[in-house]
Length: 94
Image (tube, rainbow, N blue to C red; front, side, top):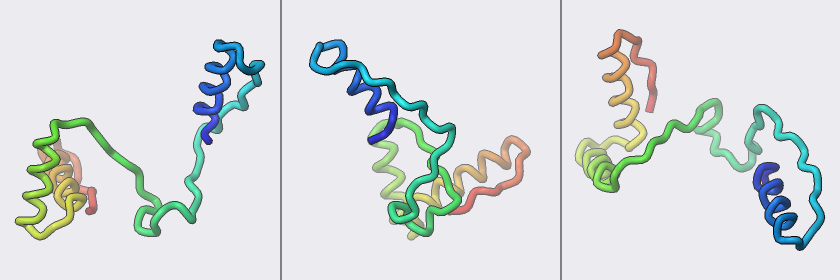
């Protein structure tokens, strides 16, 4: 259980009168995921995400099947086109 989640539960219990407040430990600035929980292919990588209409996800899935590429490869290609458009080097890898 993360520290923020535990602190939130403690606050809810405190407000509802079901348990005394317990001081929450400060969350470390950066935590590394347990190596047993992360796939080796994700080592050294970070998540970049956004919220889009479900039609965008569906269209990306269809396009990736048609092109016989992974969705990650398609997104990397799109990011590289974006980088090039704004004068940055294409560095994304799928």
